Image (tube, rainbow, N blue to C red; front, top):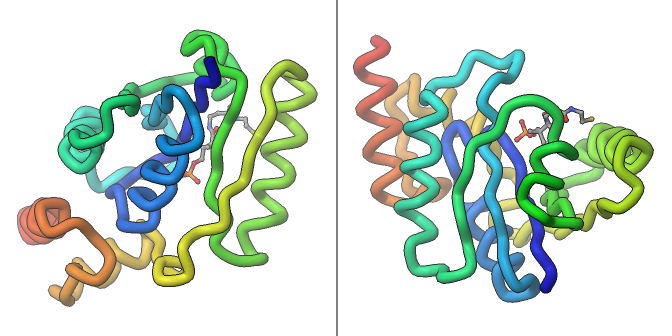
Length: 161
Ligand code: PNS
């Protein structure tokens, strides 16, 4: 049984993330989406909210589970009894950081491999950071986010003033 972990901040989950989750779910027996709890970034959504958002948009995928994690990714991967980390690559600018993470994780846990999926071209420019910026200026989010997630981002952005 091949179990993969797809880790990230998911603040918020975008159509690009959803594309990677769906494609990973077709390739692997089980997928655990790992939502990072404590990051140096200040998130717009709490970890609980991010987990709930991911559950909403993946409810149709039977072999996908959403969990939060804290600490080292490789420890979380072991706790899931997984041996694959999946990351999406949008453009060459992602590559250096992703390569550094993959090497570091492999040195710490040689039993875990990182697999990269190229993002669907339609979403290759989408990032949670850009989406939050558009939301702060009241822009249209539907091209980047699931409609329900777009509504939640708009609401949160409004409440933050
Ligand atoms: O969506 P992001 O913010 O690009 O995801 C980054 C993530 C969560 C994959 C990365 O920050 C991470 O793995 N954090 C956990 C801490 C860790 O294991 N650090 C060492 C890996 S180099």
